[in-house]
Length: 312
Image (tube, rainbow, N blue to C red; front, side, top):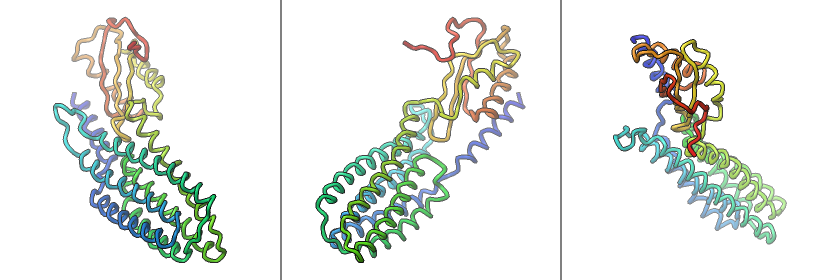
């Protein structure tokens, strides 16, 4: 029994270490910085006549909301579980990532439509002002990215915010290049073309976030997990007759959960199953990275032995 407790303690400590704590102050600072960029770009876009700057301002405003949502949801997710919300509030961050992704998808579609109209009717643009404003935004975006860099792999929500800032940085580079070419060669059609490229890139990055958040919210099995291999590995144990009714899901983008029914070959006492439970949890943790698991032992009592239970 002591070995089992020791093993679980090791799992939990490793789990806490792997998640890490996200620095909320960094998110708040990045939010303020991004909002400032948005105001600067709106003013610059109106004065210069550049829709690329205005579309980038709209993009930046969406990113400001995204980073602020990341900040709020990060604070909420740290609340302790309650008797009504036994899993705590970790999925608030996934909901925020989904909202961010949907918002950016809508913004991208709007930008593409506006770019199309501008492409058909190019208008004179102040290229020099484009370059100056975009350069300021590039510097600010780079600072914001640097602030979130160390936290970006800690959860999907922060990664979504970081990708927003990365797309802002790349779009600022595109606007600078476009502004230089417009200033020297008066190729005004470049402005809507850059706008279109920015929108397509943002939509591509957004799709990944939406897909990940969607799979987590519908409790899909982790894509990296093969349930057939999990079943086979447990059934190799001498004490196990059959493993059925397997369920696996992600609580958030880091934490995998698993449960199953284990049919034993002999009718063991509860105290005798402790050793079997230790072996199963060792397999789940070491071979499949499943540190959160619930095992239900049975002996010749479940008529349905299918791997996935049909609830229809």
